[in-house]
Length: 151
Image 1 (cartoon, rainbow, N blue to C red):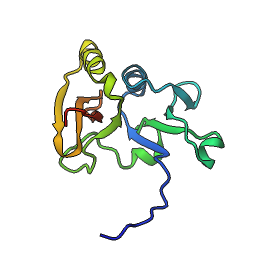
Image 2 (image 1 turned 30 degrees about the vertical axis):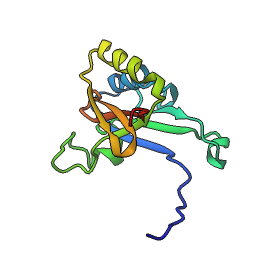
Image 3 (image 1 turned 90 degrees about the horizontal axis):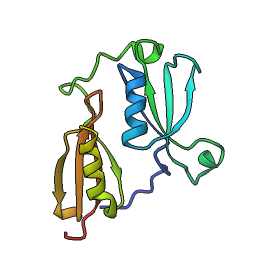
Image 4 (image 1 turned 180 degrees about the horizontal axis):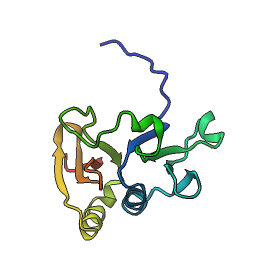
């Protein structure tokens, strides 16, 4: 298979529609540790931007970190036209995966369970990886994945 050079440097944003923006913000701040970057409007926001990581790119150095955005589709006009809630039968989204350090695997599993989340474990021997799967308040499946030294 020929090597294809991609123009993509990194993920700049992941944007999801949420039914309860305050609840989703609290979840992503507490569970994934994404701090608030900005929100609009300042009072009663329709969109919240949380920082995942700084980007070492012209965009990132220009003040745009890697963002995880939460949109209230009932009040944000572009999203309102399309959003009908999570429907796994018609959505192309399967899950969102985030890499964690292998040393954090067991402590993250315990922390997620202490937060009351149902955690499902999976190993991927062909990739030398193991993962923790859980759901956000909107029902989206999230994954913490890391290298598995046993593989």
